[in-house]
Length: 292
Length: 328
Image (cartoon, rainbow over all chains, first blue to last red; front, side, top):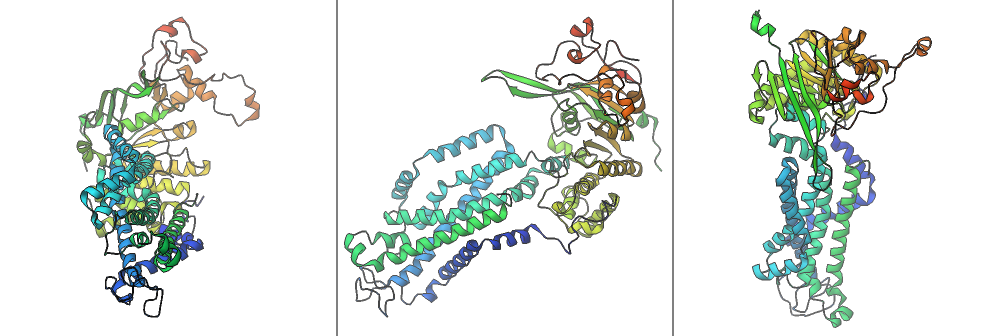
């Protein structure tokens, strides 16, 4: 009878979606560890010049020397301090990862939102274009583009983003297609809301969860892709350091067997970074989708 | 005090003239069919009354409701609001009229944006129409909550913290935010518990008296429609088959379909249960391919030869029925 008088859950204050989400995320132990490691990596990258004992570019008198008290992780064949280069590389690798994701997630989200909301032939054309991009043998195309445009950080970010947005666009499109049939979107139209308001206030906030999860995994993916390209010599160019081109330096069998300090640290860093970010992604996925 | 002039009083608030709505459907790879969801509906709704729309699922009553407030384009016919033809209005031209006509939705779980607080849900229509902002908007939200009898403390909560009935109250408050004259209620109580249904119906009635609202009330619960409506329109396969004052339609139906629909209401009295009654057989035919003649003839116990070939039109003063051989 007094159904209208007392709100169902008479808790003090209102547990907003964010607090609920944070609670669920913290229950995922690995995700919390991953978040801590990721934060430490980001901090390292930001403070790189302060943390590295040597300049990553300065050449010392010892070449390919094993770890010592002066060079904690030894020196590379040119005589540069591996530990300092490792720290400098974290800056490059993370920057590529985050910049790429920021670029393609923004583009993919906008494209997917508009495509699904407008529908009709716009949607048809956009979807065929995404199909085209997804059908490209993308490693080949990236190699060609990089060799044409020249390898630079901007080029790498651009080509990686160019071939990653379709996934996000399709993801956003599919959630918007189902969301726009919901009554709250119809109510928005009945109330005379303009398309931008419906797109960004009503559809986007409700489609955000899968985008955030995808973006997190995307950072790890972009870091790996950059490493792959750099390993092949098509990515970050020396003397700048990235984990990928440091691994690339270790392509000879003698280095592989006799000088593990050259390839073990960048390999481990790559592993740790990708694992940590993926754990964060897992945690986000579980926290944002309580039914999953 | 405003004096209602003669022409205003006699002119219906909403006039539908032969409104049709088709949906394309795919039959084969290339063959395209069309579903006649609403097939030539003519109906006047006068200011202050409640017109109930009833019929089985799929009879086009919800589509008609969405077409009235121009959430869907009609494919033929004319829609006039307060004498102004709005049939072909663009989204932009409809905008000012959005403050005049609103909708209450069936499912209170999908009709509220889960990411918005109640105060944002209620203030957004005002802000989008350049109406009060800031402190004025806050006050308006408080008044709206009072109107639908929700505590003012609800403002900072999210929809998931409310029960179905409370959510429906929020949906009603949102529809009232722009002070509309006409509200299309699309099965507003079908998703609620029976005890809550009565509360919401009473709230709608009170609001109608207080704010001089006009309702088009869509429902398949006959009890709810009878309770709230001044007049009732019975729909079958996209057409109105019977139209008249609520009590006359319910007490002395003239169309066999209405009669069968009413007899389908379960009787609570076991002594009356044994009474002979006709049962509505089968399901409504596919609206993509409606039967010729009277659309109801395949299921009608009284169908005669004329019904197989000739479609009846809605005739009769006051209490109209689309039947060659009306009952009573």
